[in-house]
Length: 547
Ligand code: NAP
Image (cartoon, rainbow, N blue to C red; front, side, top):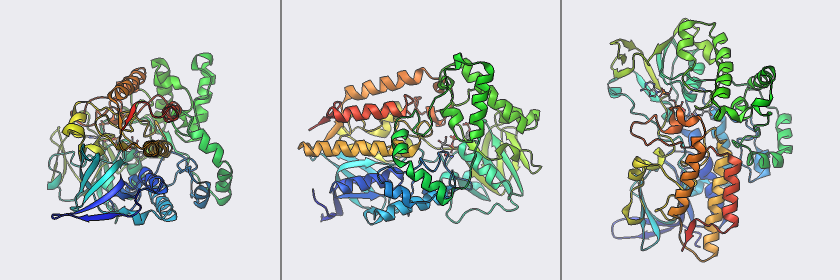
């Protein structure tokens, strides 16, 4: 392995020669760069943003923060690194998380090996050479043996959602492309479209500032109040003492958090006992109500309905039983937890403000954006100064489909995924040798996994796999068709037993017109997924052909 970036002059262009290339400088990309550099590889990262952070670079909208507690939204490869950072609260907001990832990148001296402000345009596999030719929007060509796409699960914003967006006279921003200089909402007439995890954070954060706000509600969400509190130095030192325990724990639980389903079976409990458990987790103020009470929520219609009713009652009380608001803002046509459950802070109370209106866009859908604002199907024009598009992402497949990726025999990933989204455990795709992926479809992700847990585990596996191949004199790794088929079958079988597949959401790809329906996140449990990955590594990577 060489250790320097080699630039080869060709008659037409400069070609950067690499052993490995990492796309993305978020949680996964930074760690992947570090691991491959540790192996002595000539590796370089490429990032579209001007800085590190990935999700935490792009999503700088008001109120952005994660729903995992700070003590587990962490890297686990270095106890020293863990202890070197001091989170200010249980659920830190975006600016702090962006600072943390900069701290990590600086401590590991990663930035010198990352090319910023560079978006990858294409990646074509050259079968004869066994290498990838990658091009960028800055005109660079890279020739690399291994290509590791750490492009993020939720990084392709649905930014052109409505006709007429360009005609709007005011400001219009997608939350995933939020301007660094911020947006002034003071005294303005604001529209927020979307009430997913993002919309909820925006709405509750800007409510005290706006002149007036119209929230366009189509599908309401079950919510859980976030209990956020400050972390002192002493708090953090205590978590530090538990570093090894937490590190081991998050790898074994259902969703990569430190909590897990530990309540007795639903059927063995009295009504009162069940309510007590739900109350206790409601007060806990984390995602534990969803991911650490009753696994039956995921597959038993009756349990799902009981728990949904518990949450609905809580929401109804907070809305003061207002019939119109309850009808619009409390879900009734899907079960609690079959959609990503957001944590919130006084979100529902926003709708009780005199200057806030919930607009029902189930009965009167948004038709277009016009110069003055938003026109709905009832012919009404909602005049506003600022429009916030909290309308989500082309999740899982979107980030990779934006790149023109061609594998063996000229196959195109975008085209294949337009027909059916398939991967081999989210780590590789059959037909694309030496292309590895993190945060890709069919691996655990986004609240069905605490992202730092899963991304690190995937990076570790990918690094181990490449290392194994090279140590054994092999130059290419490709998931076999049989392995991929078996994984897709297993994934679908597990998913089909759950109620999640019955609910429309980005989890199922149903938020993007024409996207083939399949649960994008593996729901068989992080612990099980991790174990399977470890077994494959221990057995010498069966299912991954090396040549
Ligand atoms: P999302 O969950 O897909 O929500 C998008 C929202 O926009 C939905 O309410 C959707 O309504 C609405 N929408 C889309 N098109 C519309 C249209 N034409 N008319 C009216 N409404 C429309 O996206 P998100 O809120 O950005 O969240 C995505 C994921 O990011 C989350 O599920 C979570 O995993 C992650 N996230 C995490 C955090 C956190 O950790 N706290 C925060 C933010 C995001 P329909 O449902 O009816 O389509």
